[in-house]
Image (tube, rainbow, N blue to C red; front, side, top):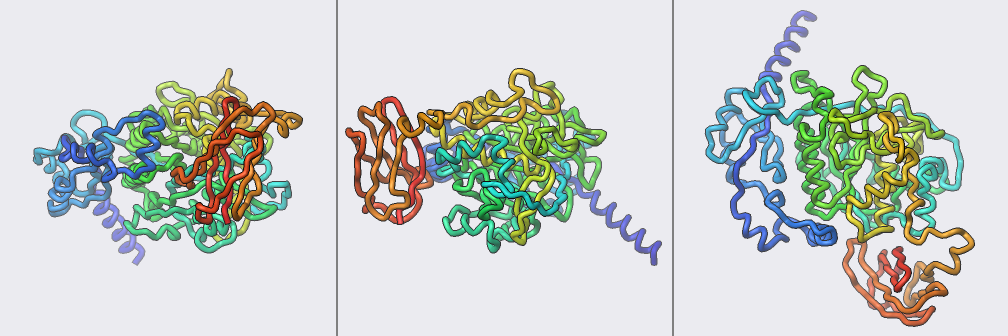
Amino acid sequence: MKKFFLFLLLSLSTIAFSQEDAWVYFNVKSNQQSYFDSPLQMLSQRSLDRRTNQNIAIDLKDVPIDATFINQVKAVAGITVMAKSKWMNAIHVRGTQALINSLKGFDFVDKVDFANKTLNQAGKTAKVFKQKEQSKTRKTKIDYSYGSSDNQIKMLHGDVLHKQNYTGTGKIIAILDAGFLGVNTTQPFQRLRDNNQILGGYNFVLSDSDVYTSDSHGTSVLSTMGGYTENKLVGTAPDASYYLFITEDVRTENPVEESLWVEAAEKADSLGVDVINTSLGYFEFDNSAYNHTYNDMNGTTAFISRGAEIAFSKGMIVVASAGNEGGTSNPHIGAPADAVSVLAIGAVNSAKTRASFSSIGPSYDGRIKPDVMAQGVSAVLSNEFGDIVTANGTSFSGPIMAGMVASFWQAYPLKTNKEIIALIIKSADRYTEPTAQYGYGIPDFSSTLPLTLSVNDFAKNYFVAYPNPTSDFISVEFPESFNKGTVGFYTILGQKVLERQVSSSIDTFSLKSLSNGIYIYKIESEAFSKIGKIIKK
């Protein structure tokens, strides 16, 4: 029986690996002008607004992939289409080597890249990389004003952001992960559910809308940004909104996960997402022929890294965990952390010392990586049962940073993604002397805040809007140097619903015309500006 069982396993393995994975690239898109004329067919208004704010033009990458091409490939017996990418104008297919090569006969096919690079006759393949994140957990009994999550927030001076009402309001974060068990039922996510801050999601692995399944890794990741348990856990962006996407298949390690990640990033772009967080990194697969090497960590080889770079070109910020391979024979960052514009996050402990597992740089082409660091040792988070525990890994330093990025961007709503990243890196404690272990170091999110004020100056030089929450009227009090200004109110998705010109240092007006809910207010004068949130009840 044992011999038979072993033979059966070997046979199944041989059969499985006779099926190859490849990317089939198309050479044209049809009907692009109709999409350019009516962009809402392919992008939401919020996505278009994000591009307008950053002076980003719509281009051919935004146009959907031609469905007739996909259908023709699907019609080939023995070929399975696993994923698609409009940005790359490509599909991910599975089949025998011969069948996949036969697809080159279609006149709309530009090229075929096998995940197994030895099967490519010419040119470089889009390779894949997978590294496994640590998830050691133990309970914590630390008690701070933020509860046990105090240190991971204050290390970045995120408490200063929060005190000035920059808590992620108006920003949307997409989490690309393995699953979100318990997010729909447990207490740490109750506040997100009550305030309708979970905007939706999709399971790209199973092609359905159930994201509260498969795994709890995404649950823990989300909790570091949006979780809230009084005196125990506060996320770094508790008032941001979230999309939850499953792109990681916990049952197997296969290059299709990279393709699903890019497909999810495209969806995030179309929905108007501001920040993408991913704790996934890619290096090794079940079929070792698909593995990456350090040479591939150049920002342009891996399919996922190229997709992440396009995501940045569309106005989003991609925050990726650097990886947990620092103590292995291959200690360098993986994909997509190797992408030029991705903010790659390493891990430190509570004393700001680099975690031994945190993957190091540089990228293969010599760029500084990781970019910055955050706490990833004994990071405080929620598990799928709602217990507040600690865990180790850049899986958690990454989202801790991503939440801070969203809250920080709220303070600078008119700046581009490139400008926000530059400010963050410039604020880091090793900015002038970056290293392969720490990158530029630990950012100080308070150092470049607009109107960063001393405690003594705060009262006389800052705007005040009250009462908050309010059921009707709101009063706005300006600083002593006030001349004239404007107060505008926006939905959490950025739609302006009310604007008022004010010319006195204290003005009161009605919010009766607004429905109950959370609004963003923007108060501006000639010398000052403030953005915050207010609740109409």
